Length: 228
Image (cartoon, rainbow, N blue to C red; front, side):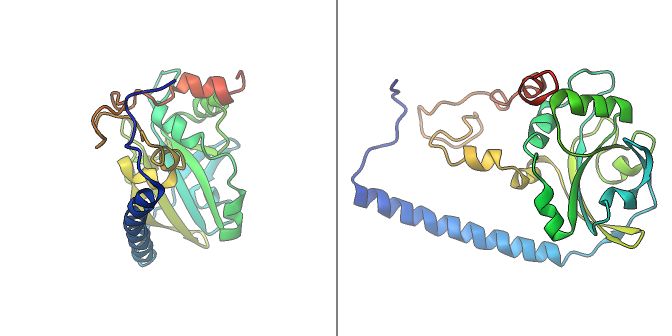
């Protein structure tokens, strides 16, 4: 199969010069990300109230979400009451994280917190084959206080625990979560990229409406869920 949407063909030396020029920008971006991470490590923090959430075994304090570690990453999963299929973006994003034991070496844990009632949340987790530990903030102001209120969007929050006292150290939402994903990193390496209309691509490159290539929650369930 061939297509008219092809990059120009050049000799190996010309290709290498173009790659070297691109590599200069990639290295500069890497150094900037290192500098951003250094600034993040110097962020102050905010003391959190002693929230009570719901887990698979019943009520849990916020400090218990750490599972004995001192650092915690929380993905606040969007939730639509009464819906069989929840946010496809959240479902697809979190389906990537199936092996998180490496965080043990860094004294850290990664969990999901959602506004959905715990029984419904756990049922959805099983339906789509999610591997993370889930908690519910349906009966707690925790979600609203960290930028993920009922009916609101998704978010990522990071916390630090000192004994039973928990502090909030970082937050992002929207495209800020992309840095945690390997899917976009891999797709952006491809000649055609994400193939979405908003992207700056050469004329003739395949492009489609934003999100149209994303897997639906039903697709994730078919691939990874209990009935998949």
